[in-house]
Structure formats: structure tokens, C-alpha cells
Image 1: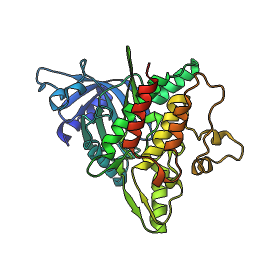
Image 2 (image 1 turned 90 degrees about the vertical axis):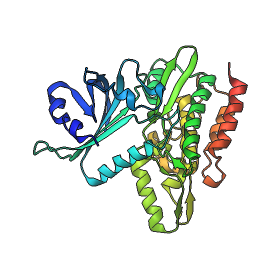
Image 3 (image 1 turned 180 degrees about the horizontal axis):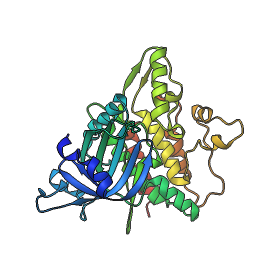
Image 4 (image 1 turned 120 degrees about the vertical axis):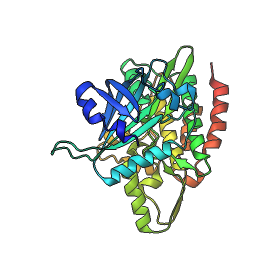
Length: 340
């Protein structure tokens, strides 16, 4: 995976703030974020006379090529074989998707590293993506809350429609995939003049084939344990909190998360986070019983049809929960009705 070039990172990282992803060199501009053992940087490609035209030559879709050579780079410090396989799986799964509302992986490299005695990681992974500097839906929600602003009904529906389009692509593959962590922190927004924001779903680290047959208590407990590590609690479907010993799990776990995310586009939080602040409140209990709390006196007041739409997706029984194709049909009708 480009070790001959990417292996130079040990030299360049400390010396000049440059990194190599295969045969392409990037200058680190600044850090954009971090979480766990992963760091996200804004980088700019360094083009020299000996360059082969740059990373743009490897990018299949011209719309993903940066005009000014800037990209987002995720650096992951890998401590063991389990984490190594996890990152390899994220890279493999990311390469399956090709949709304007799913963040594409443009290039990647995984390199073995030997560092100081106190260094406890064995590999570093570098993943290159298009950059979206307006932040996530979560970032935007915090900013808007501070300014006492909200999305218009039209923008709520347009943002949501784009997320549906990306998930429909994943759910309708020959082997359907579930994203498994749909939430505002995994939705990138780019503001556009005179148009609704562009919404792009990112982070496929938890994405897996959507359909699982659970046929024993150990299998059910194993799924619950996996979900507790990889699926954010306020957006986690009931069947991932308390899985029956005989169950058919499918991509409608994402539909639950999608319903929570639609609520969050309107009100800035999951519909169940109120339980975290209640004395004796239980997030799991609120989720299992689909106890949605609607804000009172919220401005703007959204149409009741949007509240009904959220409730339709938040069916505790997955067998009666709608599928993504049904949701797309319904959101298109709502857009027609409420667009300005």
C-alpha cells in the first residue's frame, strides 16, 4: 500500500508537517477534529515538477477533484490487529459506494511504523476525502442554537431527502449495507447560495451487511455488545438495545436512526436525549417505548405532518417500520407540499 513513499511519513511528519499517501505528498494546513485514535486534518497537495499530475489522476469522479488542491485527511493510529482489520474493512466498504450524498474515499495508505519505546501503535492509516469546511449537521445545530436560529421547513426536508438518497444507495445494493451510525455528527453540510445545504453522509467505520439472522441468545448478546460499541446510543434502534434470541435484523435499523436524525435537524438533539437529563430517566427505556418528547413553544413551529413522519419511522417493532423506498416517496410528497 505505497509503503515506499508513505514510509517517509516518519521523517516528514516531524520535520515539515508533510505526509505522503502513496506517491502523493500533502502539506498539513491545520487540524479539523479528533476522536479516539483518529485525527482529521485539512491538507493541501504539494505538486512538484516530478509529480505525475497529482492525486487528481486517481480520482474517477471529476466532481471530487479539489480546485485548490485541498482535501481532508484522516489519520488513524492502529494499536493491534483487531483495529487494523477494522480500518481495512472501513476502506473496503467505502469503496463499494458511489453516490453524491455519500462521502467518497479518494485514496488511502496503511503503513507499519516503529517509533519511540513509549509509542504503543503499530500502524498508521491515512484516508483522503473531499473537504467540506462548513462542518457537520451537529456543528451547525450548535451554532444555530446559540443564535436562536432554525432550519426552514423546506431546508429540513431537503437535507433529509439527501440523506435518504445516500442510504437508499446503500440499502439497495445487491448485498444491502446498513450505515449503523446515522446521526448529525456523521452528516457533513455545505451551505450554497440560493439553494438548500448539500448534505453528505460520512464515516463508514460501522457500516456492515444489513441483514443478520439471530438464532440464539449468545448471538443476540454478541450483536448488542457490538452495537454498544459502534452505534451511538441516542440514535440506536430498539432491536440493537434488546435483541430477541430469534430475530431477523435488517437495514431498518438505519430507518430508526434516520427518524431520530430528522427530529435532530428540526430541534438539534435526538428525540430521546431528554431522558439523560431526567432524574431516574433511562435512555434505553425511552427508546424501547418510543417515548418521543416534542418541544413546546419551539420557534419555528414545524408542520404536524413532520412530527407524524418522525413517529412513522420510530416504530419500536422493526417489522412494521417503513423501508427507505417508502420514506423517499413520502418525503417527496412533503417537499411538494411545503417547499417555498
